[in-house]
Image (cartoon, rainbow, N blue to C red):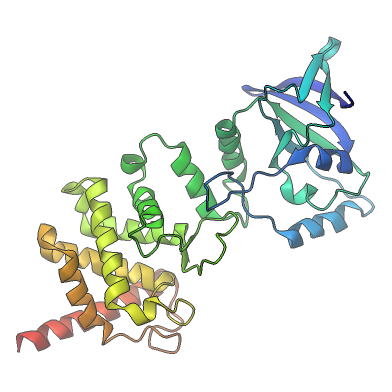
Length: 337
């Protein structure tokens, strides 16, 4: 059985066993793979591949004086002897990989550096964890990339959700956002960008991160968790967005031409949802939400050319929420007259 052999140095990185070594880029590319999140199945955990980012590194690494920190991999446990590690003296080790087994090293932190180097012989340093499970590997990836510039924050939130043992109580805003993303009844189902490979045919409205932050506004302003469980709060939020999609159907159905499903609209509407809860409490039903939102719909211009145009940041959200509250107040006076 033909094999690929790489001489390594064996040791530990804090509490984890690792290998340190050097190998040509083309060889590392051939024996490794990225584990991109498939948003349709939930498999994988990494951000979608950015070809431009990878090509930038390809151009750089071929320049005189170029260098890089070690690429990070993981040899996942397998039961088919696709790889073996032969220990020797003085912490040296020989990694033997069955050349017919396909890639065996997961690219924990190097997919963009390695992505377009399949034809290069440039020597690169690497560090490879030995035997991490997928869950342990994902946790390492999250720690490494938590502060990475440009990394999709929704992807890290998605990781947190998969690693958290009691998500509803530990991160209720993320729990509720994921309920909105996953419940087939929710108008947000399949509409949120999580950060992995996009589901084919979906017209995305917002990111998981945006919706999570909006839900946090609702929880803080409504104080609903002082009276209700996270699951009950999730039902209130789900009913509210179902009501939005019905009462404001025209704007909801054209996410590209409307600010309703953009950050400023999502945040402002979650503040209105909190107002409704504070006004009605347990008496707040989906039908009541639809009725009040239908009245509001006829008075709000959500277009990118309307009065909400250009609003952004905390001050923009505050201005948008204030505008919606003024309209609701005016409608209340009009209906009472």
